[in-house]
Image 1 (cartoon, rainbow, N blue to C red):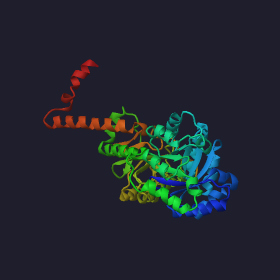
Image 2: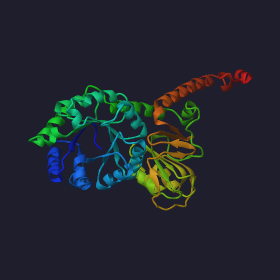
Image 3: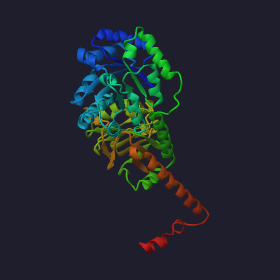
Image 4: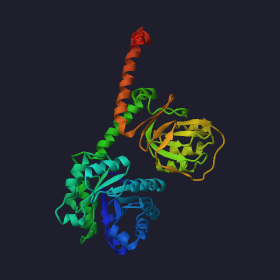
Length: 432
């Protein structure tokens, strides 16, 4: 996926040949993402997705399916045809979106949700973010544009309420694309201003220049989230798992999971559910994880190994932060030599088989703790704790406070006191 901002050209044609020619010129003009528009998909079918991905293998291809029902099926269709991002409608039922997301995680694609026609857009966008969609699209349709409606007005309402990337669509030209970028949009979706131009390449270049020539003065939600994320991660690297356990009132502490190799581990959870002894999804998750991620595997506490040396080496290559397994691991000597933090319930030389049952990117339970995709996972010699994503900053700061209080007690003990005297345990015992 591209760095922000992204210029996305919407190919709302009904003829595939014309769409391909327009895409070729737009790519020369510098666009980042290619959208296979809804009219094109309705006219030509998913073969339009397949052909555009074949022509532009290094570009992110967005399938604007505008899915309202059968979410998993339509995501699978688009993903198998080569889409990198699949668009659903925000008016769809949550069950449709959640099922679509499960399919997206299975096939390694992203989910964008289009808010066209949604009432109470801010509330719906916040709900969609909680569900876990990857992108939101603030969209004013062509018929609404004819009535003078402006997507920037909706963008301003949504911008400070969500943290995930926001796309904007609806009559954008170079000037409006720049304005949308200044208001915090991360994906600028442009259709007719590019595809109906006499010189498509020059029209695309003009929009790219308008958006990317200067740094925007306002920080986007993504930029603000990145700064917050760095702050949370810095604090979690500084504190220990006991500090976090105390700060969270012992919630999130995995039971029975111990360090097998490596040192301190701090990252965001990539979750995996596997059947007992089935290691296929565990190693598939490596391809979906990246720098700073922790792969967390719910193997049901089974004693047959689902992890070993070769999987660990693959993680090291991908700069994965570490691995947590509610199950068994083998090749301990080699894993220790690699140095990747690995935590597990058992060590067992017996390996299972790659059958492929399970799921990536789902809510799992490991060591008695519920883990959601994106939660913070911290491991050290004491064990592993999970910090819910939505409480990351709060618990990180409370853990730092715990550490600072302990540092003061530590200093008083160094000066000659004892723990019982510093905390006045005898007084408190009398009150209990």
